[in-house]
Image 1 (cartoon, one colour):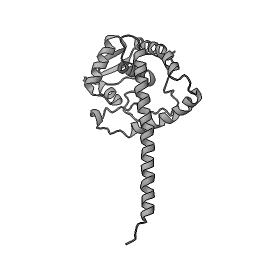
Image 2 (tube, helix red, strand yellow):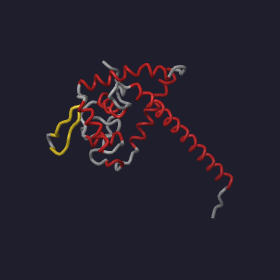
Image 3 (cartoon, helix red, strand yellow):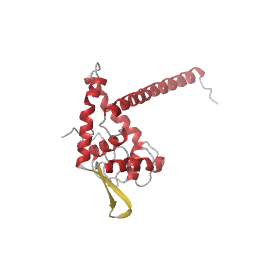
Image 4 (cartoon, one colour):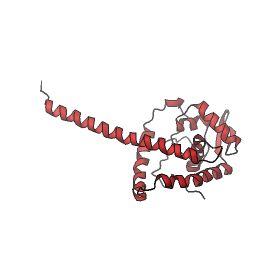
Length: 200
């Protein structure tokens, strides 16, 4: 039986540990950035709009189409109950419309309204000063260069999600999926569509 070189094995483990810590550090920074920026954005949102509601409006504005509440819950990785509550508040404000699915009366279809699109654009305009304040002293060119990498990481993690998480099934919709067309993983930010459309 061939003997393993203990030094070589040790080096291999050391490299793996170093790689693991590097990966942890990368995602740890993303988590901290998300927490700090989300708190700042929430404070700057228009009165009556939560970060959860803005997230749904932004999702529709970026991707278009109609979704079932189940697909939205899967995309945002929240329970269906939590998503239903968010959608009810959005509908009450006239920011989304909810109708019965003509092919299956037990299901609902959700769509962004013109009022909802305007509310999303107002929210973005309102926290633009916060964005500028948060990034004061940072290189905008470096931020722009970092965005494609973050998009690739997000797409990679999205594609690797367990379809059973949060009750996903045939109605699975990733955070970068297209409209409810049966091709939940067919559209990615690497295509021609701008993943961050500007207010019109």
